[in-house]
Image (tube, rainbow, N blue to C red):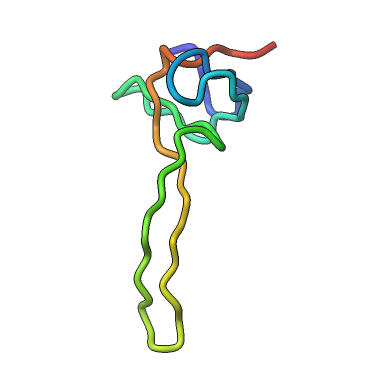
Length: 72
């Protein structure tokens, strides 16, 4: 896998085609990368204490490395 953490990439396929971002995490065992601002999913987080509120978080999910291209 030629793409590493910290590389700037552009998405060349999928729903996020054309978006640019920085690689936050590389997962070579699964041939996937996590790019900031790409493939965002909403995840709920319950309150752990009575004073805390529940939240809806948006987190970036991994995409296949074949769907991204290194940017110069």
